[in-house]
Length: 564
Image 1 (cartoon, rainbow, N blue to C red):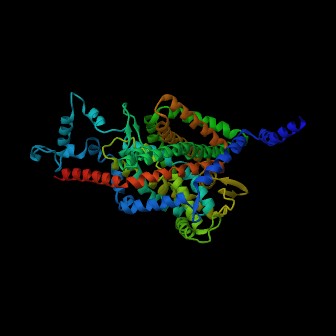
Image 2: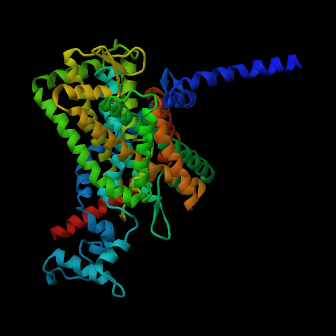
Image 3: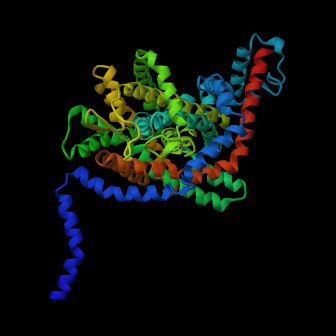
């Protein structure tokens, strides 16, 4: 009997010890300890290496370069058309179709151009002709193309999913780890990512589903399943779609949620001087309640919030960055010089030389703009249009806004700030921590110190900015994750509620756990989506080429009509 009791005691001793240790910790530390093994596991699986480099990064860069060349540098050639599409320049052809409005030759067939006063009058007449059984023109316009939101709303929702704390905390993390040179590779990745984003968002609209109530369901899950079936690979498409949906749900819990609440918590604790071991948990509860109120309303409410909040907060943040940069005008050329110099420095400290700097830059840029992950195509697929490529062009603006503009500005602010020698580049611990005046700062905390050097009370502004960035990203990603959840478990209310409860739980986990655990998990989930998504992009990019030509032909038809 004693022998059995001794054996049982020996078995349970480690658990008793762990329970005693965790009991002595605060709730934040307990959550972090429980979450860290999960984070470490997924990080080690997703970032497996080939030739000493994470394969997923190789896949992203090579694919982005291929799409850029194949489509003739769409990130440059069609930038102007993308702007015009967002502004509604081609709204008439996107609602009705070019041929319905203009005919094959520019003016609707059977119409004598000499009998009409102007092309605008002609369009009014065509719209009136399209009206059936007394339907008013606006009703016909809405019914003539599927979708729930405008180009601008779709872009705002998608940008709110990418313009987040990756731009504030992620840039600071990249510079703390890889030095100023990481900025150069972030920008290169952003420029190439514009082409990838164009491809995946065109496919998102092309293969979307529209429910009986007009609700749109789109994203990689649908173009993988439907598109690959068209190509004769139905089974592969189904498997890839399910895998993507699973990873997208994980991404919504991680990078689109926990990482955001984590950074919001860091700046809130710093602002209010909260040192309690349970402060993160309670901040997470408040954030979860706030986000929960918004996400109940679905994509239309999300779009109505993001189209107002995102431009405002992005503009305010950019203005503050510009103020700091222009106030230190004489240091701008020095900052860019340091960025270029360190980008190709084979002896760059902290991250293993030139390749290390490149990888840090690419990793943080890819996390920030999500080009290649496929997530943004879920939001873009809800747009109202007859031409899938129109939204693809709109989508290529996203990495430009997110990475080329906002990330670069954040980097310049930090680099200019550190000309004062406040911290050493290249954190050898791999944590992305900067020691400033004897104190440790990480992520958004580094950016906050840079802002505080030049703008009085900037800690209040940056705290508000980080929280707004976090909330907007979380509500957009809740939509991405919910769409994936519906794909796997159906479109019932019970399934929706289950997902939303889990999502809000991760808001609290992110707020309580440490930055490293959360960001390792978040990186793994975002980059995991790349593998199944790329299967779809490589099988279906000829479809994108066809749809692009169709849209460009429609624009040309309109141009010819207006010139007649």
